[in-house]
Image 1 (cartoon, rainbow, N blue to C red):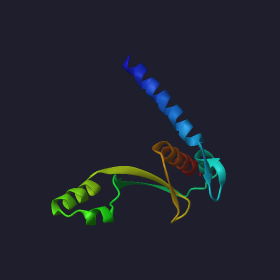
Image 2: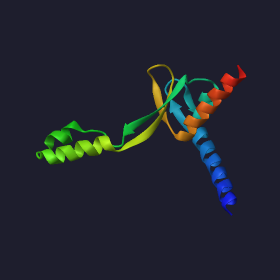
Image 3: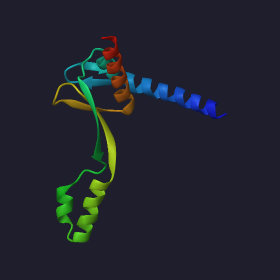
Image 4: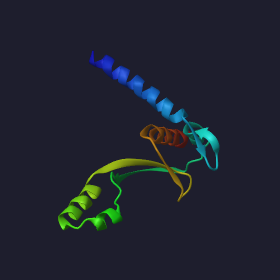
Length: 117
């Protein structure tokens, strides 16, 4: 029973990955295409995984708070909770945020290219 559940989860994740990779987007320099086609045509140079705050710090909101305890609580709330952000880079400066499925596909493709060389 448990192996059947794992198998169905793996199949579901494969389907989610394919949907995520084949979704069509409009890219300014590459037209209307999917991440899978861009990755396969070697448009991206590298990837980065990093932690970013869940809440964006709003200085105006912070300054409008009159009580220092509220300010401290707000600052703690903005810096304490983090989420993982996955990015693919076109060059050293330009990047786009992607899902974990796209990020994993890019890294697998990159590893396979290096193994072939």
